[in-house]
Image (cartoon, rainbow, N blue to C red; front, side, top):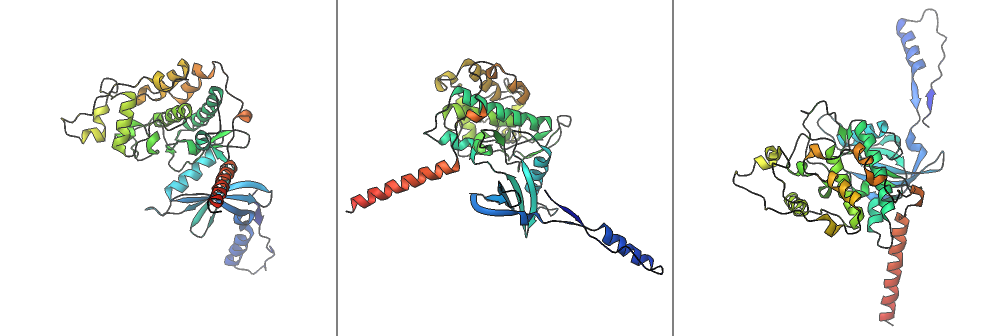
Length: 369
Protein backbone atom coordinates (compact mmCIF):
# COMPACT_ATOMS: atom_id res chain seq x y z
CA UNK A 1 0.00 0.00 0.00
CA UNK A 2 2.85 2.38 0.83
CA UNK A 3 4.83 3.21 -2.25
CA UNK A 4 8.64 3.42 -2.19
CA UNK A 5 9.92 5.88 -4.78
CA UNK A 6 13.61 5.88 -5.64
CA UNK A 7 14.98 9.28 -6.59
CA UNK A 8 16.55 9.32 -10.07
CA UNK A 9 19.93 11.03 -10.32
CA UNK A 10 22.52 11.62 -13.04
CA UNK A 11 25.28 9.10 -12.39
CA UNK A 12 27.76 10.61 -14.84
CA UNK A 13 30.47 12.60 -13.06
CA UNK A 14 33.59 14.36 -14.40
CA UNK A 15 36.84 12.41 -14.15
CA UNK A 16 38.34 15.11 -11.96
CA UNK A 17 35.46 15.11 -9.43
CA UNK A 18 36.47 14.98 -5.81
CA UNK A 19 35.75 12.20 -3.36
CA UNK A 20 33.19 14.46 -1.68
CA UNK A 21 31.32 14.89 -4.98
CA UNK A 22 31.15 11.12 -5.42
CA UNK A 23 29.77 10.75 -1.92
CA UNK A 24 27.07 13.30 -2.68
CA UNK A 25 26.08 11.40 -5.82
CA UNK A 26 25.88 8.15 -3.89
CA UNK A 27 23.78 9.85 -1.23
CA UNK A 28 21.32 11.12 -3.84
CA UNK A 29 21.21 7.75 -5.57
CA UNK A 30 20.32 5.94 -2.36
CA UNK A 31 17.79 8.52 -1.18
CA UNK A 32 14.28 7.08 -1.00
CA UNK A 33 11.05 8.94 -0.50
CA UNK A 34 8.05 7.36 1.19
CA UNK A 35 4.69 8.70 0.10
CA UNK A 36 2.99 10.34 3.05
CA UNK A 37 0.08 8.02 3.98
CA UNK A 38 -1.89 10.98 5.29
CA UNK A 39 -2.78 11.84 1.69
CA UNK A 40 -4.44 8.46 1.24
CA UNK A 41 -6.97 8.84 4.07
CA UNK A 42 -9.90 11.13 4.66
CA UNK A 43 -11.63 11.55 8.02
CA UNK A 44 -15.42 11.56 7.79
CA UNK A 45 -16.76 12.00 11.32
CA UNK A 46 -15.78 11.46 14.94
CA UNK A 47 -17.14 8.22 16.38
CA UNK A 48 -15.31 8.15 19.72
CA UNK A 49 -13.66 10.60 22.07
CA UNK A 50 -11.31 9.91 24.97
CA UNK A 51 -8.76 11.56 27.22
CA UNK A 52 -5.79 10.44 25.14
CA UNK A 53 -7.30 9.69 21.73
CA UNK A 54 -10.14 10.45 19.35
CA UNK A 55 -11.46 7.92 16.84
CA UNK A 56 -12.82 8.90 13.43
CA UNK A 57 -14.65 7.02 10.74
CA UNK A 58 -12.65 7.45 7.56
CA UNK A 59 -11.99 6.25 4.04
CA UNK A 60 -8.87 5.01 2.32
CA UNK A 61 -9.00 7.08 -0.86
CA UNK A 62 -7.00 4.70 -3.06
CA UNK A 63 -9.29 1.72 -2.37
CA UNK A 64 -12.54 3.21 -1.04
CA UNK A 65 -12.19 0.99 2.05
CA UNK A 66 -13.90 2.24 5.20
CA UNK A 67 -11.42 2.53 8.08
CA UNK A 68 -11.18 3.79 11.65
CA UNK A 69 -8.53 6.46 12.29
CA UNK A 70 -7.39 6.66 15.90
CA UNK A 71 -5.71 10.01 16.53
CA UNK A 72 -3.53 9.73 19.63
CA UNK A 73 -2.68 12.90 21.50
CA UNK A 74 1.01 12.33 22.08
CA UNK A 75 2.27 12.66 25.64
CA UNK A 76 6.02 12.69 26.14
CA UNK A 77 7.64 10.42 28.69
CA UNK A 78 11.21 10.77 29.98
CA UNK A 79 12.69 9.33 26.80
CA UNK A 80 10.56 11.52 24.52
CA UNK A 81 8.01 8.89 23.47
CA UNK A 82 4.44 8.14 24.46
CA UNK A 83 4.90 4.54 25.61
CA UNK A 84 1.18 3.78 25.47
CA UNK A 85 1.06 4.63 21.77
CA UNK A 86 4.33 2.86 20.99
CA UNK A 87 3.19 -0.30 22.76
CA UNK A 88 -0.15 -0.36 20.95
CA UNK A 89 1.56 -0.03 17.56
CA UNK A 90 4.16 -2.66 18.42
CA UNK A 91 1.68 -5.29 19.53
CA UNK A 92 -0.82 -4.70 16.73
CA UNK A 93 1.99 -5.09 14.20
CA UNK A 94 3.02 -8.38 15.82
CA UNK A 95 -0.36 -9.92 16.67
CA UNK A 96 -2.01 -11.02 13.44
CA UNK A 97 -5.12 -13.09 14.15
CA UNK A 98 -8.80 -13.20 13.00
CA UNK A 99 -9.88 -12.27 16.54
CA UNK A 100 -7.53 -9.30 16.95
CA UNK A 101 -8.16 -5.94 15.29
CA UNK A 102 -6.04 -5.25 12.21
CA UNK A 103 -3.61 -2.32 12.12
CA UNK A 104 -3.46 -1.08 8.52
CA UNK A 105 -1.17 1.95 8.67
CA UNK A 106 0.53 4.41 11.02
CA UNK A 107 1.39 8.03 10.24
CA UNK A 108 2.08 11.22 12.15
CA UNK A 109 0.73 14.72 11.72
CA UNK A 110 2.04 17.60 13.81
CA UNK A 111 2.08 16.30 17.40
CA UNK A 112 -0.48 13.55 16.82
CA UNK A 113 0.06 9.92 15.93
CA UNK A 114 -2.61 8.34 13.71
CA UNK A 115 -3.38 4.63 13.70
CA UNK A 116 -5.42 3.40 10.74
CA UNK A 117 -7.43 0.36 11.85
CA UNK A 118 -10.02 -1.85 10.25
CA UNK A 119 -13.49 -0.37 10.71
CA UNK A 120 -15.69 -2.25 13.19
CA UNK A 121 -19.08 -0.68 13.82
CA UNK A 122 -20.13 -2.51 16.98
CA UNK A 123 -18.83 -3.85 20.27
CA UNK A 124 -19.94 -6.34 22.89
CA UNK A 125 -20.99 -3.64 25.36
CA UNK A 126 -23.51 -2.26 22.84
CA UNK A 127 -25.07 -5.68 22.37
CA UNK A 128 -25.24 -6.40 26.11
CA UNK A 129 -26.95 -3.06 26.77
CA UNK A 130 -29.41 -3.27 23.84
CA UNK A 131 -32.58 -4.36 25.64
CA UNK A 132 -34.34 -5.11 22.34
CA UNK A 133 -31.60 -7.58 21.32
CA UNK A 134 -32.22 -11.15 22.46
CA UNK A 135 -29.34 -13.63 22.53
CA UNK A 136 -29.02 -17.26 23.52
CA UNK A 137 -26.62 -19.60 25.31
CA UNK A 138 -25.18 -20.54 21.90
CA UNK A 139 -24.56 -16.86 21.12
CA UNK A 140 -22.71 -16.37 24.42
CA UNK A 141 -20.58 -19.43 23.65
CA UNK A 142 -19.65 -17.96 20.29
CA UNK A 143 -18.57 -14.58 21.71
CA UNK A 144 -16.65 -16.32 24.51
CA UNK A 145 -14.79 -18.70 22.21
CA UNK A 146 -13.73 -15.85 19.92
CA UNK A 147 -12.56 -13.81 22.92
CA UNK A 148 -10.51 -16.74 24.23
CA UNK A 149 -9.03 -17.50 20.81
CA UNK A 150 -7.81 -13.93 20.49
CA UNK A 151 -6.51 -13.95 24.06
CA UNK A 152 -4.79 -17.33 23.62
CA UNK A 153 -2.94 -15.88 20.62
CA UNK A 154 -1.82 -12.94 22.78
CA UNK A 155 -0.61 -15.19 25.58
CA UNK A 156 1.23 -17.65 23.34
CA UNK A 157 2.90 -14.58 21.80
CA UNK A 158 3.97 -13.51 25.34
CA UNK A 159 1.65 -10.50 25.50
CA UNK A 160 -0.56 -9.44 28.43
CA UNK A 161 -3.58 -7.41 27.26
CA UNK A 162 -4.40 -5.81 30.65
CA UNK A 163 -7.58 -3.99 29.59
CA UNK A 164 -10.18 -6.54 28.57
CA UNK A 165 -13.77 -5.31 28.88
CA UNK A 166 -16.89 -5.47 26.68
CA UNK A 167 -16.30 -2.20 24.81
CA UNK A 168 -12.77 -3.32 23.91
CA UNK A 169 -14.23 -6.39 22.19
CA UNK A 170 -15.23 -5.05 18.80
CA UNK A 171 -17.50 -6.80 16.34
CA UNK A 172 -17.26 -6.80 12.54
CA UNK A 173 -20.08 -6.73 9.99
CA UNK A 174 -19.59 -10.51 9.60
CA UNK A 175 -19.98 -11.12 13.34
CA UNK A 176 -16.31 -11.72 14.11
CA UNK A 177 -15.31 -10.52 17.58
CA UNK A 178 -11.89 -8.86 17.78
CA UNK A 179 -9.74 -7.79 20.72
CA UNK A 180 -8.83 -4.09 20.54
CA UNK A 181 -7.12 -1.30 22.51
CA UNK A 182 -3.64 -2.60 23.32
CA UNK A 183 -2.48 0.64 24.95
CA UNK A 184 -1.95 -1.02 28.35
CA UNK A 185 -0.50 -4.25 26.97
CA UNK A 186 3.05 -5.37 27.58
CA UNK A 187 5.50 -8.18 26.93
CA UNK A 188 5.57 -10.92 29.52
CA UNK A 189 7.53 -14.12 29.90
CA UNK A 190 6.86 -16.68 32.62
CA UNK A 191 10.58 -17.55 32.54
CA UNK A 192 11.29 -14.24 34.32
CA UNK A 193 8.96 -14.21 37.35
CA UNK A 194 10.85 -11.34 39.02
CA UNK A 195 9.82 -8.65 36.54
CA UNK A 196 7.92 -5.83 38.25
CA UNK A 197 4.84 -4.27 36.62
CA UNK A 198 2.32 -1.63 37.62
CA UNK A 199 -0.88 -2.77 39.31
CA UNK A 200 -2.77 0.25 37.92
CA UNK A 201 -4.09 -1.55 34.85
CA UNK A 202 -7.44 -2.95 33.71
CA UNK A 203 -10.72 -1.06 34.16
CA UNK A 204 -11.78 -1.48 37.80
CA UNK A 205 -14.87 -3.68 37.26
CA UNK A 206 -12.72 -6.22 35.40
CA UNK A 207 -9.58 -5.93 37.56
CA UNK A 208 -8.27 -9.06 39.27
CA UNK A 209 -8.03 -9.03 43.11
CA UNK A 210 -4.23 -9.38 43.08
CA UNK A 211 -4.05 -6.08 41.19
CA UNK A 212 -6.43 -4.43 43.66
CA UNK A 213 -4.07 -5.65 46.41
CA UNK A 214 -1.19 -3.88 44.62
CA UNK A 215 0.64 -6.88 43.14
CA UNK A 216 3.69 -5.93 41.07
CA UNK A 217 4.34 -9.50 39.97
CA UNK A 218 1.51 -11.14 38.07
CA UNK A 219 0.82 -12.99 34.85
CA UNK A 220 -1.68 -14.06 32.22
CA UNK A 221 -4.24 -14.86 34.91
CA UNK A 222 -5.18 -11.16 35.24
CA UNK A 223 -6.60 -11.33 31.70
CA UNK A 224 -8.53 -14.50 32.54
CA UNK A 225 -10.20 -12.77 35.51
CA UNK A 226 -11.37 -10.03 33.14
CA UNK A 227 -12.79 -12.63 30.73
CA UNK A 228 -14.63 -14.26 33.64
CA UNK A 229 -16.24 -10.91 34.51
CA UNK A 230 -17.26 -10.47 30.86
CA UNK A 231 -18.69 -14.02 30.82
CA UNK A 232 -20.81 -13.24 33.89
CA UNK A 233 -21.93 -9.95 32.33
CA UNK A 234 -23.09 -11.74 29.17
CA UNK A 235 -25.23 -14.09 31.25
CA UNK A 236 -26.62 -11.34 33.51
CA UNK A 237 -26.92 -8.56 30.89
CA UNK A 238 -25.43 -6.19 33.49
CA UNK A 239 -21.92 -5.76 35.00
CA UNK A 240 -21.22 -8.45 37.59
CA UNK A 241 -18.80 -6.63 39.93
CA UNK A 242 -19.35 -2.85 39.53
CA UNK A 243 -17.33 -1.12 42.26
CA UNK A 244 -17.04 2.68 42.53
CA UNK A 245 -13.62 2.68 44.26
CA UNK A 246 -10.84 0.14 44.73
CA UNK A 247 -11.92 -0.58 48.32
CA UNK A 248 -15.57 -0.87 47.29
CA UNK A 249 -14.52 -3.14 44.41
CA UNK A 250 -12.86 -5.52 46.86
CA UNK A 251 -15.94 -5.48 49.08
CA UNK A 252 -18.20 -6.33 46.11
CA UNK A 253 -15.88 -9.18 45.06
CA UNK A 254 -15.85 -10.56 48.61
CA UNK A 255 -19.64 -10.38 48.87
CA UNK A 256 -19.98 -12.28 45.58
CA UNK A 257 -17.21 -14.86 45.98
CA UNK A 258 -16.65 -14.94 49.74
CA UNK A 259 -13.78 -13.33 51.65
CA UNK A 260 -10.47 -14.98 50.65
CA UNK A 261 -8.10 -16.50 53.19
CA UNK A 262 -4.44 -17.43 53.21
CA UNK A 263 -5.52 -21.08 53.03
CA UNK A 264 -7.29 -20.73 49.67
CA UNK A 265 -4.87 -18.08 48.37
CA UNK A 266 -1.34 -18.71 49.70
CA UNK A 267 0.79 -15.56 49.66
CA UNK A 268 -2.18 -13.21 49.73
CA UNK A 269 -1.06 -11.51 52.95
CA UNK A 270 2.31 -10.63 51.45
CA UNK A 271 0.75 -8.43 48.75
CA UNK A 272 1.59 -4.68 49.13
CA UNK A 273 -1.87 -3.40 50.07
CA UNK A 274 -2.40 -6.04 52.77
CA UNK A 275 1.11 -5.54 54.17
CA UNK A 276 0.35 -1.84 54.61
CA UNK A 277 -2.66 -2.53 56.85
CA UNK A 278 -2.38 -2.74 60.66
CA UNK A 279 -1.74 -6.35 61.80
CA UNK A 280 -5.06 -6.44 63.64
CA UNK A 281 -7.11 -5.34 60.59
CA UNK A 282 -9.53 -7.92 59.24
CA UNK A 283 -11.77 -7.69 56.20
CA UNK A 284 -15.45 -8.41 56.82
CA UNK A 285 -16.13 -12.13 56.51
CA UNK A 286 -18.61 -12.97 53.75
CA UNK A 287 -19.80 -16.34 52.54
CA UNK A 288 -19.89 -16.96 48.80
CA UNK A 289 -23.23 -16.18 47.13
CA UNK A 290 -24.37 -19.40 45.38
CA UNK A 291 -24.05 -18.80 41.65
CA UNK A 292 -27.05 -20.96 40.96
CA UNK A 293 -29.17 -18.31 42.73
CA UNK A 294 -27.90 -15.59 40.43
CA UNK A 295 -27.21 -17.35 37.12
CA UNK A 296 -30.51 -19.20 37.02
CA UNK A 297 -30.40 -20.06 33.31
CA UNK A 298 -26.74 -21.20 33.22
CA UNK A 299 -25.82 -24.83 32.85
CA UNK A 300 -23.46 -26.66 35.21
CA UNK A 301 -20.69 -26.55 32.58
CA UNK A 302 -20.99 -22.75 32.27
CA UNK A 303 -20.81 -22.28 36.05
CA UNK A 304 -17.82 -24.61 36.28
CA UNK A 305 -15.94 -22.57 33.66
CA UNK A 306 -16.91 -19.31 35.38
CA UNK A 307 -15.65 -20.63 38.74
CA UNK A 308 -12.32 -21.63 37.20
CA UNK A 309 -11.93 -18.13 35.72
CA UNK A 310 -12.90 -16.25 38.88
CA UNK A 311 -10.62 -18.17 41.25
CA UNK A 312 -8.82 -16.08 43.86
CA UNK A 313 -5.48 -17.88 43.66
CA UNK A 314 -3.92 -16.70 40.34
CA UNK A 315 -1.85 -19.89 40.05
CA UNK A 316 -5.06 -21.97 40.15
CA UNK A 317 -6.94 -19.83 37.62
CA UNK A 318 -7.63 -21.56 34.32
CA UNK A 319 -5.49 -20.56 31.30
CA UNK A 320 -6.85 -19.40 27.93
CA UNK A 321 -5.82 -22.69 26.33
CA UNK A 322 -7.43 -24.76 29.08
CA UNK A 323 -10.60 -22.67 28.86
CA UNK A 324 -10.87 -23.35 25.11
CA UNK A 325 -10.68 -27.09 25.87
CA UNK A 326 -13.38 -26.89 28.57
CA UNK A 327 -16.47 -29.12 28.00
CA UNK A 328 -18.65 -25.98 27.96
CA UNK A 329 -17.65 -25.34 24.34
CA UNK A 330 -18.17 -28.97 23.25
CA UNK A 331 -21.52 -29.51 24.92
CA UNK A 332 -24.79 -28.62 23.24
CA UNK A 333 -25.90 -26.14 22.14
CA UNK A 334 -22.97 -25.57 19.81
CA UNK A 335 -21.62 -22.01 19.47
CA UNK A 336 -23.54 -19.89 16.96
CA UNK A 337 -21.80 -19.21 13.66
CA UNK A 338 -20.49 -15.61 13.83
CA UNK A 339 -22.47 -14.59 10.74
CA UNK A 340 -25.71 -15.58 12.54
CA UNK A 341 -25.02 -13.70 15.79
CA UNK A 342 -27.27 -10.81 16.88
CA UNK A 343 -26.08 -7.42 15.66
CA UNK A 344 -26.40 -3.94 17.12
CA UNK A 345 -24.41 -1.12 15.55
CA UNK A 346 -23.79 2.55 16.20
CA UNK A 347 -26.30 3.27 13.42
CA UNK A 348 -28.96 1.26 15.29
CA UNK A 349 -28.19 3.21 18.44
CA UNK A 350 -28.38 6.57 16.63
CA UNK A 351 -31.61 5.55 14.90
CA UNK A 352 -33.13 4.63 18.25
CA UNK A 353 -32.07 7.99 19.71
CA UNK A 354 -33.59 9.85 16.74
CA UNK A 355 -36.89 7.99 17.10
CA UNK A 356 -36.96 8.78 20.81
CA UNK A 357 -36.26 12.46 20.16
CA UNK A 358 -38.94 12.61 17.45
CA UNK A 359 -41.42 11.00 19.84
CA UNK A 360 -40.55 13.50 22.57
CA UNK A 361 -41.00 16.36 20.10
CA UNK A 362 -44.45 15.12 19.05
CA UNK A 363 -45.53 14.84 22.70
CA UNK A 364 -44.28 18.38 23.39
CA UNK A 365 -46.22 19.77 20.42
CA UNK A 366 -49.44 18.10 21.55
CA UNK A 367 -49.00 19.49 25.06
CA UNK A 368 -48.88 23.05 23.77
CA UNK A 369 -51.68 22.89 21.15
